Length: 120
Image (cartoon, rainbow, N blue to C red; front, side, top):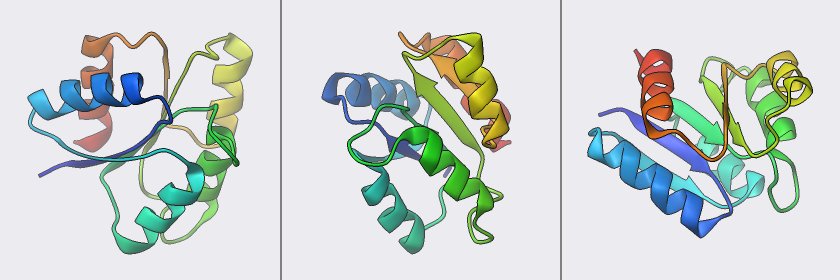
């Protein structure tokens, strides 16, 4: 089964994204900070990481860069999911290695299309 690591500190967003992905038959592990994400990544390698930009402590941009520059996680696709949806934010995410950039509020069809594209 495809496993998604969701790094999102908003309970409402976490629930909405998790419900959408689980209805599509995907397994979701959710954490609320980059620190928790690092701990999960040491224990298991998901098929995709979806990360918010605004997080407590380390930002989602920094987490993306670390995932993509670490030899044990660099092959895991990363989708940034944020209210920060300007072209500059998307370019910055791309420069840090993000494989996709989804703007909030999340369009569920776009979310599923992106997840399926990055995990197949």
